[in-house]
Length: 397
Ligand code: SAH
Ligand code: SF4
Image 1 (cartoon, rainbow, N blue to C red):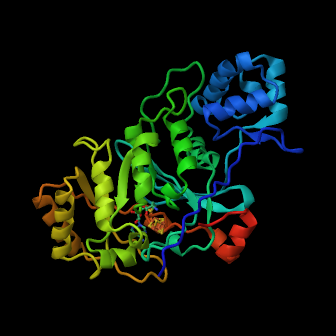
Image 2: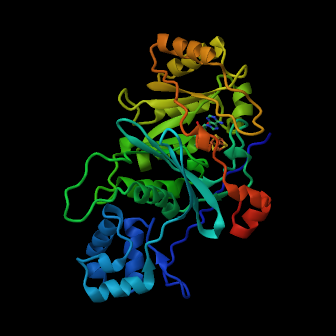
Image 3: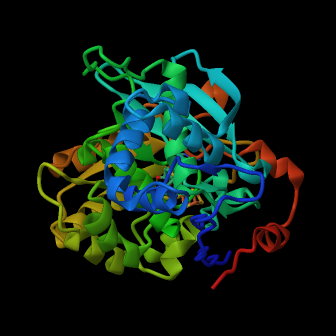
């Protein structure tokens, strides 16, 4: 198994001029990009900052999609905007609801690609599991997404669009003039869907900035968790430029085993990864790093593994919690889930060492919405990765 190279070229470029016959989608533009695009299309420079603020609030605070509803803008200006721009979200192709209330959406993005988004309601919160890529260039051997051949980075608009689509479905946009509802159905984001978010850094960052913007969706950075398989050079940037919480797909306690389970380990070994985590500047006892650990029968689930895991974390003095994930099987998967007794024994060793060791409740299994089971139907197209990249004009380094 070889470690695939990351996609380094972002697919999004900011259109400055109106594309022939088409409209420019405003969703996913940063405030600066929105300003630029408004000015390039006739908004006076002096007014641009104010217009950005107004349009931003309509899109992200109120969920408005029609420029004609933006009542604090002059009618003629609204008509101008409508001619040139659109507020477009990914199209929801299917929506499945699990017995336990978990919802899985299959959404279609430009080019006909599809990605999955999962909403998980809990007693005191609602978490949206967002995808950052179509498929994944990495090939973790236990992950269904890693077997998908199609790969492309999502744009910032497609990433934040997943959240907006879910808010539409949950009916959670506030109504102008009415008090803001503080008890949110969608209160948390985890970047744990399809793809490696740190191989699509800029678009993920821009989308999360939109999610955190106080004039819009306004989620606290502490309610956003980015999960990475261990793209070491991007970990410090995550703290600096996004500032969200971090989860790390650890999954093995020796380099030999991690090389197989999480092949990016061949590039950045366990010690390098642990060093980057201990340097993560936001780390404190209240903002611990989550170590995700998938429990694979006879592969990484021994008592020795549990002790080694604790040793690693202690050696680097990392405030951590360890999230044990029972392996979610998928058709043809080369591993089995560890027994409940084994998982409990493993959890107990970690707990005795003084670390929280919650066992992740598997949600939405009946609709294949659980962690690592996501793999879009676009796979059926059966195109080779090379073909797709050539079509999308992507380059690999
Ligand atoms: N690419 C990122 C985020 C997406 S995967 C990453 O790897 O962190 C989200 C989490 O689900 C990761 O911890 C991943 O290792 C885990 N996962 C993948 N396949 C799984 C499976 N079949 N069962 C349980 N967890 C799985
Ligand atoms: Fe990609 Fe994460 Fe799956 Fe690995 S576990 S193949 S990094 S999505």
